[in-house]
Image: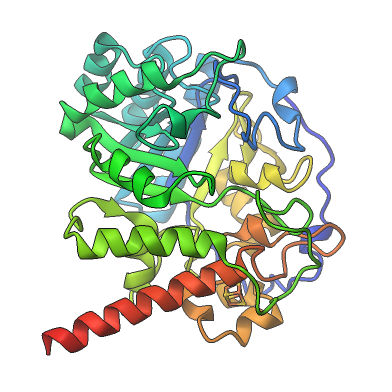
Length: 399
Ligand code: SF4
């Protein structure tokens, strides 16, 4: 078990006494802690946190069983009627589908509620036989791609520098033929790629949904293509990521492809119309996801690792601690505080209730923690205002 002292200082300025814990409903279960790819931008293996090196590569059956018991305990204690488990890595299919199936079975055997299971893969090990077995177990598959062409995926290579794209494209074709098993595509934005080419090439792969992700960055490690600046709400400035996303939004909205879910756009549109958010990228809804590492450590979401060494750690594990104990961790509490965790600039921001300060991890600055606007602040404001403007124009035209 890897336990390093957890630095509490990033949360020291937050008043968590008003925190009303919201139970976890999304359990990210690490099946395998290594990956056969070596993507040049990977925050997990190329970022500041090297904790993965100290953990076992594979999750043992004992850890799977104990995690399942802890999930069941949490479900019973909070009277939950449905949860999601997400089987992750590294690459969760690195040693075949067996461990993924075993983990899902372990949870379903003991958890007395509806369990939706998804595996997130780079696609390189998704053979027809593997997909058959996952589909047979009711486990849906999400693919990680940077676009629908070889050139878009040039950064996704294996440890010998060979491209992942040929195998990933075959996986996407297999999934397109099995829509019930296809959860969608996660795509990290690369400004060097044309947004409409990326969008249309991804749609050609037939996914039910695409999740566009901003590259993980913060005030110490600025996003690719952006300068280093002190934390704050800087105006005016270029908004390359906001522009990129606005171009995709227009194509999605104008070309009538709304049946393909684009989570970020749906979330922002929903928030503008008064709904609560369900994603961590925008909005103020409490975070209800937790991670269990290959050694049973209970952690916060992986993306925190892009901030600093040990940022996702809680010092807890499934052998000694319940998930309720994790709900009281200051890092988890901070992500359930909504406006209580926002910076002054965000509290006074005209799009603050929709943007919600953006993804928590993008607010980080060394020495002062997470109480800052997002490093993507101007891009987020640009996108929110753009979507608001398009919704308003459509509503006027249909009146
Ligand atoms: S709410 Fe969003 S757009 Fe507004 S200041 Fe904060 S990060 Fe910037």
